Length: 349
Ligand code: FES
Image (cartoon, rainbow, N blue to C red; front, side):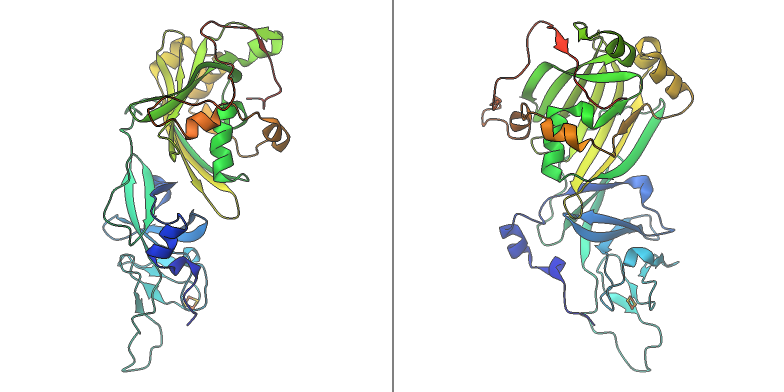
């Protein structure tokens, strides 16, 4: 039996380090099944997710207390427990207690400290939220989902080689580096600065067709708007594509959470709305008609462009002022009337 690992620090110690108390959306609901466990991360610590016999998602540290084999390489038993693939120790998903050890001698009992650390789990709007135990009974605070039912849907997940805070800041300062919209180019023109409304902080960016971007050095007209919004320092972002007359053409919810070794897990789901069919660019329409996702979060971020990204909007986006007024770090590009924009070298979409 191995000694307890670092993930078993008491809640007070974790809280003093600013860890453990936060609910993070770390997976899509459909990724978690009762057929095979799924490896994920909570604040950099490996955890394993699976569904028990009642369909409830369970989360344990992804480390067998016996010889540290990843439990995510094991299997879900018919009675909804998790069995290590190495020597077959079995764990209850609620308590984390070891419930069975093969070849246990007759009369031998399983010590109560043979357990895998359990985590709190809940599902909201198709995302699996996880938090450490010992931080009370609170539920994750999630704004009501704006993703409507029906219509073509898409979803995806990736891990990017950028720390969580930097990823969130890059979304606010240069979403063109991180978000891909078929046939569209997200420009560096900010049509609405970061501002807080109903607890959500949003920024709006001008969007043009890829063809327009290629054919014109300067763009003065932005037929679409990309609106990013989330709670300050939120892990669940809303990404909306609006037409010129403010119709919602596409909406995606993007879950961002810290993974291991300075990487960030990104999971998203969303839908295309009828406004995209009549008014959107041809490539977006075609992909939607073929059932292909017109939206994705970019996995391979261009580090050269990321390093050159000015920190213009992220401060006010991630840390709005106490009264709700934003406090830009430096003057931003926002203007009340459209202006000319020099096309920059963002990633192609
Ligand atoms: S490592 Fe031996 S049962 Fe898991």
